[in-house]
Amino acid sequence: MSVKKKYRVLLAVLAAAVLLCGGGVVYYHGEWWFPALYAMRRLEAPDLNELTLDGARLWTLEELVAQENVTLSNNLLLVNASHPLPEGYTPELIEYNGAKMHPLMRDPYVAMRDDIQARTGVRIYVASDYRTPEEQQEILNSSEEGIAAPLGCSEHEAGLALDVYAPYHAGINVLRSRAGRLLPRVCADYGYIIRYPFGKEEITGISYEPWHVRYVGVPHAEIMTDAGLTMEEYVEALTPGTWYQSGKYQIARLSADALRLPVDFTHCDISPDNTGYYIVTVEL
Ligand SMILES: [Zn+2]
Image (cartoon, rainbow, N blue to C red):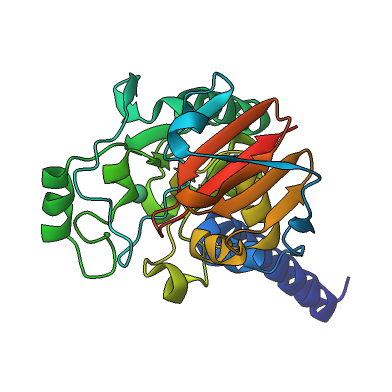
């Protein structure tokens, strides 16, 4: 081999090594590439097809929640800077592994965590759960503006959100772990959403938080995630008084004095949305 040829081979090997190392470094820093790549995924139109009810019965809220097959909870409460928690709001909480959360959230959280661990070999943990107003104030005092929600406007105070981390990777660095990158792809299956997505900061008022998951329940989480809607956009997309079909569910956003529901339902979930309406989710 001539000296010139040897020199070329050496250069090629060096270039390959630099590319490989560089690629490895970039891949490790999931927080650099993952958000934009995930935001560019193919989105679907919201799975909400307008529906005319065959027959309907008008209920009062008291009558409805007294039914055995009706569950009243706060899973669809919109909480943000312009929709603070209702005065005197007392969250319904249970404790799991030291983390306080709404009772509806525990089983789906455990199933989601186990699914992520089975698929990536990495377990996620809860870094922050329910916060008292005092704890939220402390966080506000110690963080820059726009990072934490104002007092009374945090989903943590509602007991409906969890901040998660993977071992050695907390905050934005959760995206350096495969578990953190799988989270936005599977959370909707368990009724959770990434509440503050990348590129939607102007709508949510909160910067991108890939670690903050909010429980809204199925099928709402799936509709929002598949269509790339924030919770603000989702609530807005539900025209008050209109019924929608979404898979096996029927959904409507109704005022308390116009709770017109399908006649024969097997189960009904009802939650105030904090904009003056109730979101009703019915299975026939
Ligand atoms: Zn959070």
